[in-house]
Image 1 (cartoon, rainbow, N blue to C red):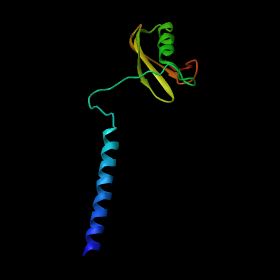
Image 2: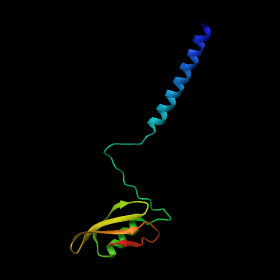
Image 3: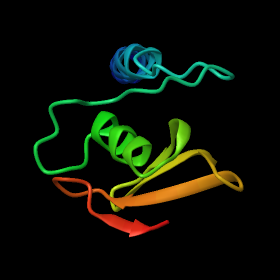
Image 4: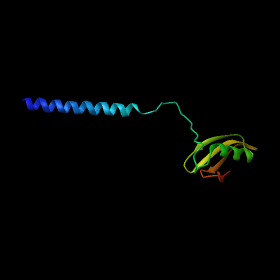
Length: 101
């Protein structure tokens, strides 16, 4: 009978240890529903800088240019051209080469 209580006690200690470890990792999540943070990394050496992409789009004649989307392959800048809303797509590579206007 003592052996049964000892095994149950050890199982309870292991279960409490596992519960406390999962509670710490679950609380480390930085998810806030409804809040979307936009982060621009200026020191990314092998990619197109968002600031440079907006500057190049403005030089191409886009007014009120802003970043619309950044993916590992492309940087999309939206603004207004001569005929209304326009979009310029740059490759996410150094120097921001133009993909599509």
